Length: 75
Length: 248
Length: 249
Image (cartoon, rainbow over all chains, first blue to last red; front, side, top):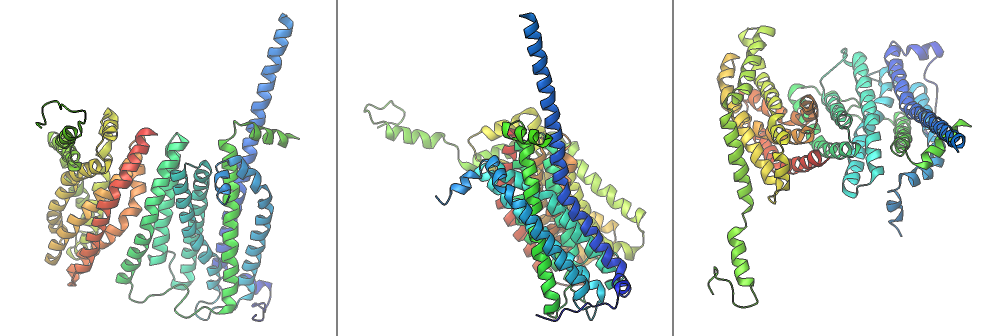
């Protein structure tokens, strides 16, 4: 393969990119944010869904216990 | 025997459990490819003779454009499968693919516009590719908006499937029309990749990024579809058990 | 054996076949029935026919007010502006294509009839075009005069709009069918249909522009004709499918 040499003198040159730095880095940054959003959104939705289901399960078991208690008290 | 997996796909639960193991591998692969490709393209590929360093945006713009178009076809095909074979899973894949494709189209548009500033001195230029991307973005937004508008999920899926299919038929027509329109108004054609063949030292990081984007798309599509499965099947016992297991 | 007499023998095939050929309506009879009905409704609501035309006129009037009344500027804008506004006027009128039938239940009846839905949709779209697209096309030369369109552009304007508005009605019917069951379907309809309209707009406006610059426009008109042919075949199919989904969903 072709020889891989780092194309810039030092890190600050890398940042500046001969004046084109802001454009290139803005693009990469926006893309990184967008891709991270795409990856995280389903995870957050899943967590919210599970929290909701757990809450519902708690409410249901609470009601079930109350009804059991009421029936044992009556009998 | 060969079609068994196709029929198994009718069960969202089977799909969910089967793909449990795929996620970490896809995540690892996509992150590795994207990081390698990005660092390679940013730091190790030589600068372009005409455009200098701003051409490095190509390593995002081109993969995003490919995926934006591919994503629409994936959405349309899964919509068609859901419409014809009435497969719930296919509908879920279609619904999940739409926002991913829209975001990728957005990335392609923004990077294309930002690339235009140092290259042509303007933030926006009505050239064939960007205009076609913009129309593709509108096609995505239409499908997403149609999905959101219906209250009954099954109706929403069928309607979006039809819209996606109509859009698919139109995409080549739109691209060709915009291409032709642009040749009328721009005497000097300036293509992003130029008329000269791209050098191999620039091509390899580009290929890496393209493959990385494809794998990432597969990863996010899978994750979104799985969450959609959980959402649709949330009243079933296996999903409730899954949710309960998270408490511990 | 006389067909109208009950047959003596057990085998009634001959008489039934004869009877069937007399009673079964042909495929186009559904088309004409719907066409006549929609046409009658349109004629009875003659005032509504004026709405797209007035919209056309008023928006074109805003162009010199908003941009510039200079002849040179207007002449350059004219072909594209007339085309864009014609497109918008068509979009606005599309929402009503199926909606009133949907609301009073006659759309459901249409879906249940044994006639193929394709022809029913084609009939409705034809009436829509006769009531919207055709008047817009006829109005266009007047608006061309108001916008200082060069004389070479008038015939191409008519030709391109004639073919183009028919395409717009057909393609738009798909969007109308998809959104007919939704409450605020109108704006969503525009959102969905606009990208699909761009090829028609590009070639239609380009035909007028090229003619003004002195080039032959056979190519553009041929492409518009091709769009129309494909739309006539495919659009009612998609719209019919979408109608079934909207009504039954």
